[in-house]
Image (cartoon, rainbow, N blue to C red; front, side):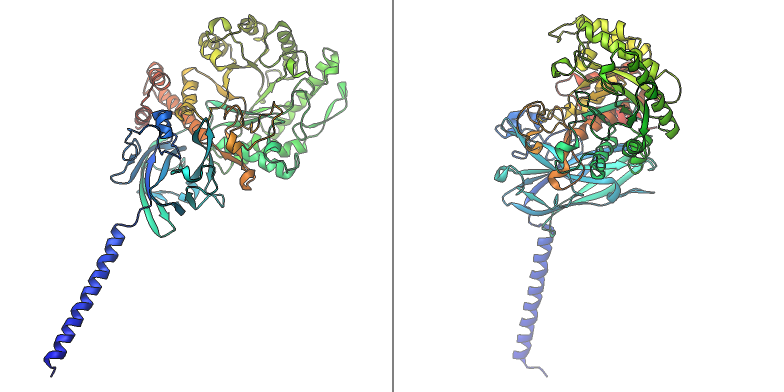
Length: 629
């Protein structure tokens, strides 16, 4: 029998234990339901730039972007891709397409160290999209221009050291001023994926234990597929003396490592629906090691001594073998520059002598036979003369010609090439002319009009196959470019790459311009100008200068050497340009399927290109909807 005192003590102890367990359980539940949040996490689309200082968008103007004026936008809670109330990212995509968005971490009171961002597979009713293979994330790096900080280089999470993230970034240039860090997310949708809705999650963890956010990703995949073939050939032009050696000064020219680095540039361009191309000679006509097959003999006895080294360097990109593991698997480059220039295959000492024509014709025959024998017949092979008098080597301006003597020299070269590469056989070789002053009489912006701009067509038309026209002159002369196309000519327009301070939507515009102006290609005259190459200034870090005075106008890649990586680092502008090329394919496919007339699609293009504030998300949804069966 238990006495009353002992019974009361047991009751009191039991009640205390229950209260302790309840309070412990309640505290644990409360902690689980309301974890400490050190950052706000939200999402924007792939056409805006987010300030690392204010967290505001560039499209709101520089005053808001800098933080001097408050933002009135609601994008932190709701946008075309984001609903904060359900933490959901909603996306639309075709197959063989990249769809992208940006995750923004915005600091509150505490600094953040060891932030991890991870993605799950996206799962549909019949298939899944592998996160390991098809979801790639990038840390945005920032550089300053005129007191404003812009995102540009995108450091892949695949590189050790890119993560975990810190806010502010202890390795970055902003210091304590940084209050926002953005992450770019690419999702590639494979060709064979069944149309469906695919769902997954992206988790943001602080110190691997503190949950900051769980983002629900909902991707609707339509039943159409973007073409593997580039219906708009995008030329990321580079020069033989501006390439790898300036980004990797420790590498031996034309060594196996050099070639492996170079190959990665071709691959990255290919993955972004573009062609990396190298003008394979210098302005003085010299050809850097490895960019030409070695010759032997002279005159009638001229021969290619050995193809093996040249084949080893470029065979993979000409056959498509170098791209077999990329989205457009096995598709070769869209075009390729042959090493022809004023000093090769014949020397200028033979200018207008029989030997000049003889050596051109013989090497042309050998090139045609070799490329056909290898089966490398899909790319268009281009011959382009990038020589100007003011460089001090030759007496003509063959690039952007403006004078009678320029046209005469180009005409002579064209006639010689016509003998070397007649229009027959499986190998396509185009004599290319880059012309700045094209029908100046029709271009209001042309300050220095040249009569040769109109005469160039009549005088060089019989020999020039590809006309690459300065973009303002192209846009102002659509009627004249149509005449060239009617004469079976290929027409491109050219410009510099988008500048870092520009709104990101300007990078998307280029694909829409390609459609509106009926171009066969778009050329950007440099993609790797990491220093002010034509000045005596000491080379500077492109991650802080974007190539110097051009501010990105001649580079969309960064050298990975800064991070111990033997390959290119993409820019946010490169990603937005890809979006524009995909939009071009949408427009072309809609027209081909008869879902809208070309006139109707041109109205949409005009609303995109010429509106102060185009409804791009609305246009994108409309194009997607037009391709749904």
